Length: 331
Ligand code: GLU
Image (cartoon, rainbow, N blue to C red; front, side):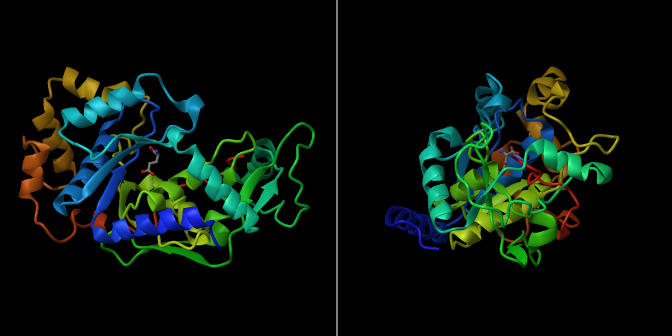
């Protein structure tokens, strides 16, 4: 597809910046306090960038306003600074970047790559009920008439028409990540029926237009990567390299939740831990230092080899984890 001149120019500039050096980012949603799994991912993402003398941006993914929690953003910033994880430049907020998302959306729409969808969340949940959980949109509206306006008081959502084939990306130091478009990704919603820009569109646009070279994030986002790479392909741009970090699980094998307040820094501090103890604990959980180590983020950085994979095996060999994605009927 051909992007409008100004978008093409800003994309080209961002892609050039990416070639000049490592540019990573941490992108929390302000939905609650970071738990130790989030903190571990932040640490790894920071280490990966600083080890390459690269930049590390902080982006607040605050588009889904009903899920945002008052004070969460301030708490996230304070926690990162307390741990010594400093970011470059101003804090970026997706809510301030709606203009570029809208421009890319209309370019995709004009190029005929989106189609309106009138399937409700309810309908999609109902048809998937016997099997529990519908991961991929079945394409009901794919060939339908392209009616833009409201019908029964409801506007359509807009989906990306995915071409057949696999979606590939560079993954850590392994041989790469991929997902089958038809069975694992599907035609994702890029603009929700309520007018909100979908997370996949905003995130794909940000990685590209902010010139992000490397994304280090939780492995729960593996399936989202397929949907985001699909958007990047649609605008004709190369995705960044990804490293998906294993999630921190509790003693029962459950993933941590921001709702469990004991898992955040407030709880850890209450238990008597200072920053050196927390960094030691996070790093030990990744086998980067022996258990019981106490050190600052900078000391940890200085102790790492400048080259080679950050994560020792087996994490490094991580492949396609069978985690459900966010492409579930985001109408
Ligand atoms: N903001 C999302 C989250 O916190 C996405 C993060 C990312 O893409 O790294 O789960």
